[in-house]
Length: 283
Ligand code: GUN
Image (cartoon, rainbow, N blue to C red; front, side):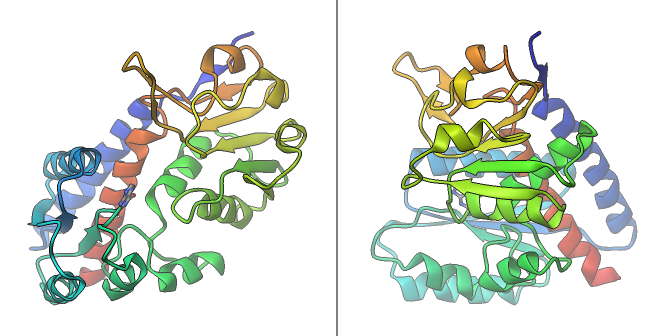
């Protein structure tokens, strides 16, 4: 039997409606949540992501400020701009779109963002808080994945979660969030010799490696939950995930599509973090 589709787009829309209601409550208390995004250079993919963030913010009633800086900017100029926004009371959330030009040290930039405005959840302080299970800004894609699984009423506690990929943005934190939910977590990466064998043991399999159709049906246990974080463009121009959808949906119990699976949840959780940050100012 074909797997049940986890419709990220629908779940994201439902959550965005709830976020909009929280924005309205804040506005009635005299606070408009504000999000600032710094975009350095002219990377078309980054520009497209930032445009999506701006559009979603405005639809939710969030004040959105885009700060564009040229590719040639110095690190010091960028840090000064972050300092300015850290002090701006209209802005509750600040993110610097990654990747940055090579001459700019990404870690120094992330660490300059006030942890209280770090709605990406990338600041080491927030990563540390997440690790010890404190209430904090959670990184958006990992948090979105947990929300998708919870929306489908899928049990996490006691389940075996296998994460393929160990990036700082997705792989590592998503494993941590599943651990916080009492799952047993296994990480696989490029040096793992027996990825297929481990993946096949997963009750919940998360794939975030950026390789089109890497996970085929023989990686998946019958009835498993398969979360595909990959966004790859095929030569035909079509988008596809890290999972071979047509094969795997015949084996899995649940599966996220690409597009309209995990993707829409990332921006939704960014809006959530921005509103959360604004709510903290009135609490
Ligand atoms: N580049 C790709 N994904 C992200 C993200 O979630 N946040 C930021 N700041 N940059 C990114």
